[in-house]
Length: 117
Image 1 (tube, rainbow, N blue to C red):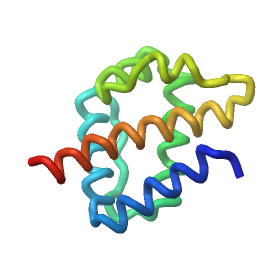
Image 2: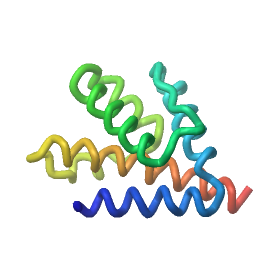
Image 3: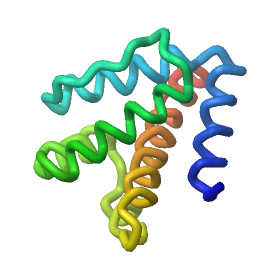
């Protein structure tokens, strides 16, 4: 099991434990809309489905709509440096790493909003 998989599982468990899982999905959906993407993740989906769906979305954007992918990263406020720093030797690991960084950034937004609003 690679490190991103462990970290993404911990992040999602933390979101569920803190009762912020639905807020995390809502934040993702909001940023998809603001990035002019027609993706929507069901708020009742399982954490496993969320991981799979986000990996699918990231892969599709990277392969077919790279400008939209960059727009999403900008909208989410994900540092380009973090994306460039990822190893892209194995495309599957690269995609899951990008998906993890997206979820991590969205989680930071939700967590800060919940704790400091």
